[in-house]
Image 1 (tube, one colour):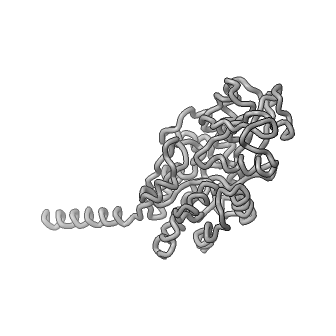
Image 2 (image 1 turned 135 degrees about the vertical axis):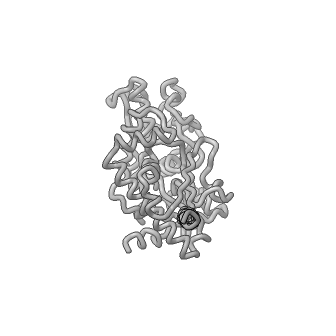
Image 3 (image 1 turned 60 degrees about the horizontal axis):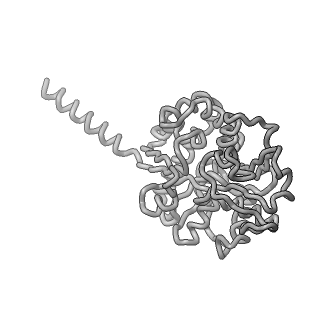
Length: 323
C-alpha cells in the first residue's frame, strides 16, 4: 500500500512539474525603471493574469544605459516597450521591430517653462535654450521644431538644445529656459520642488497635435511568422491589458505593487498612475493609424528615417484578442 501511495505521489509531482514547464516563457524589456508608467505589466504579473494565460513572464526594468531595441536585437527579450520614433529608427537600421499593440493612446510629453521667464509662446523660442532627453526621446521635440521652422543649431534665429538629464534640475538650476517633462512624472517633480501650476507655461504635445506614439509593445518581425508565437503574444497582450484595466481601476493598489517591484515613493507612484490612466483610454491595445502616420511623417520630414516604413505595425495580435 505504501509503495502504491509513493508511486502515486511521484506521478503527481511529475505531472505538476510538467504543467509548470508548459507555461510559455515571455521576457518583457521595459523602456525605463520600475514605475507606474508600466503598471499594467506589473499588475498582470502580481494578480496572476499572466499565469492564467499560461505564461511565465519576466519583466526587465530599463534604465539610462539600456536601449530596448538593442536588448531585443541581441536576444535578451521577446517583446519590448518602446516609442514609435525609436522603433522606426531602429527598424531602418536593420532591427525588424513591429508594433503589435499600443496601450498608450495619447502622449504624455510636454515642454515647460517658468511663467516669469522669457518664453510665453512658441514665438519666443528663438535664441533660447530648450532641454530635451535623447536616446530616442528627442524625436517628438525635433519634429515640433521642424514644424515651427526653427533651427536646432542655436543662434538668434534658432534654439540651442540642451541634452537634458532625466530629472528637472536643468530648470531649477536655470541651465535651460524650458525643459521636457512627462505629464505623469517630471511635472510632479517640479510641483514637489515648490513650483505651482500657475508658475509654469506648459506646451503639451498632444494638445498641440504634435504628439508621436509613445509606449507601445514591439516584437521582431521574423517571430510573427510562427502561429504559435503569435498565439503567445495574443495571450500576453490580452493579459497585459487586463492588468492595465485593473491598475486604472485600483490606482492605490497598483502603486503598492510598483513599490513591491522596486519603484520609489508610493505617493508619487499613485499620482503617476492617475496621470497614466488618462493616456491609456480604452484598454483595447489598438494602434491608431492616424497617430502612426503622423509619427512616420515626422521622422521622414526630419530625415531621421530616409524611406517610408513598411510593415512597422500589425493588428494581427489585437484582432485575435477579440476572437
